[in-house]
Image 1 (cartoon, rainbow, N blue to C red):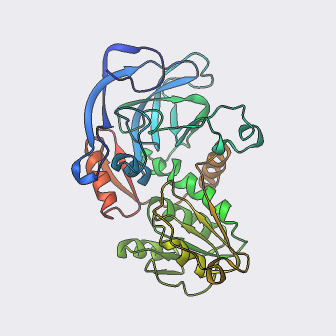
Image 2: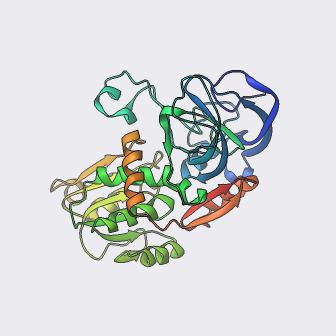
Amino acid sequence: MVATGTGAAATAAVTTTAWVVERPGPIAGRPLVRVERQVAEPGPGELLVRVTACGVCRTDLHLAEGDLAPHLPQCTPGHEIVGRVERAGPGADGWAPGDRLGAAWLASTCGSCRYCRSDRENLCPGSRYTGWDRHGGYAGHAVVDARFSYRLPDGVPDEQLAPLLCAGIIGYRALERAELPPGGRLGLYGFGASAHLTAQLALGRGATVHVLTRAADARRLALDLGAASARGAYDAPPEPLDAAILFAPVGDLVPVALAALDRGGTLAVAGIHLTDIPALNYDRQLFQERTLRSVTANTRDDGRAYLAETAARPPAVHVQRYAMGDADTALADLAADRVTGAAVLVAD
């Protein structure tokens, strides 16, 4: 049997139910399979966590469908994990059984390269990721690195916290990368789990937000949350944008979003996967100091800063709940744009 983490030998006769990517392929072909496997003991610096909720991210869909090649055989997706500590490995100081914990996409880094030493650990060549390099949260249990885990605020339901751990954190970093000026005009292309949280973050900072997305339900949600406008993905916003974030994994939208920027504006691409970008017209899309930049994962400081900001100003997290046993259905709904807000798996 495959253990659930990178820790020591698995505990005899104790099993957990987990979803695994059996053979990556179109979601209609059901690449996720549910299996029973042994529960791993946490190794040095690790925590064994009983998963109570796990967000469903588009990155999980990319993994299941093969856009991202699995780094583990029978990899378990899921990197927006909320759970309770069951056991702490040697050196996992500060955590005790029963503590509520959040684990996110960034699972570990080398800690010694020039990127780690310069507060850019998200660029570490030795970085490892939850639900890609180590088994994630589409399971009853997961093993996580204590150093890369987050303490979560009391009084908030698990399913409300789970989307913050990737959708929220990556949206936070994308907003920082977009360099939106105070009181600026922000365009959001795509309006799923991450964008609906990022919109609230920007609105709380005093921005004007325009949403461009294909789904009518998402446009209605955007207006309900306070967006100044909500139009089709390829439509022009009602005014030039100071900054924009592309959440939809659609390269065709890059020239569209760049053309919507005002002089000196920045487009940040938030996804880990993007279809090919068509040829850009320099005069219409890049001239006048428009900037195109990518967003790569996050640092732990991003996570702490975002969780602190949401604790001070809690977002309205729109959740579609699924039982853990329905993870394949949740991914299929995500692929078919049947999720408005964030999909979250909750323990059976």
